[in-house]
Image (cartoon, rainbow, N blue to C red):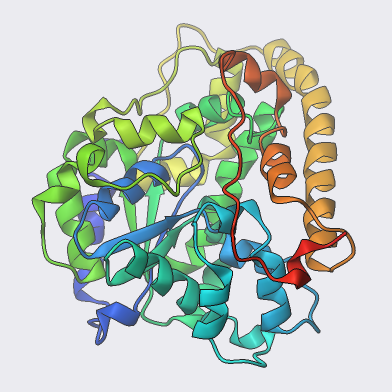
Length: 376
């Protein structure tokens, strides 16, 4: 691959081809991207703007995947309000219920999304709203169907340090191959929508935060404000679970964020990750890593063979987690918010060795909870 102009700069042309936002206050902003790619950092920078509040992983559209087709939006909201994702927003569910019409179908779920996001933005004294959720890459079709004028920013990071970081995350998987595949799949999800989203590389944001944030604010239709370069002091963090991987992003400036290739990856894993993500790497201009020596066939076989156990363990845990969420939204078995949060960070047990002093936080308790949500 040859050196090229940063892709974020090339994508500035997109700002002049999309139609202007007629009513910015009704145009949600979505921050997406592979986890560990800088989504939390970008969210914090946007939230430092005096007009913008982006929720932290409300998982609104992700949870909607688990709902039965015949459930009403009202019933779905009762179940959604009983999740740790909603609890961390610290909103009164009764206030939200009063804000959207009764007897909505699941096809009208956008009204519930608007009620939640507007309430949270208002709570923070902001008028623009939206969500940061890496998994929304798979929800773009529904998002653009519900909100044709939505402004979606996809942040990308070199897949090699991304996978390395995933390996060390309790919410990642125990398989390096699966973590590499996740990066590939999330790029595949955004490909059909590249003419409607703004793509930003983390490396460009950390190198020149002013220029990149200027392009982002122009894209979402908001005026420049120097506050976005001072998110450490200006962004609110009470809706962010105090997990060390989130806390780091809220306390570091962009140029303090590590984004380069990690030397801890073996040569074989480096080449495997590059091969799995070759399309994204070419698209964003990431070069193959220089290696002292190329891995042999034996190196590849040994590396992949040792990963088989991790694949099996990760698949089991992911399916078990999916079943818990499915049963919750099907009304069969309540998933307590505290347990839901804890199960979410038990997907990769070996990763906890990197956080020996960590103590699991308690999910905020909502004072106003519908009796329908209490469950057995």
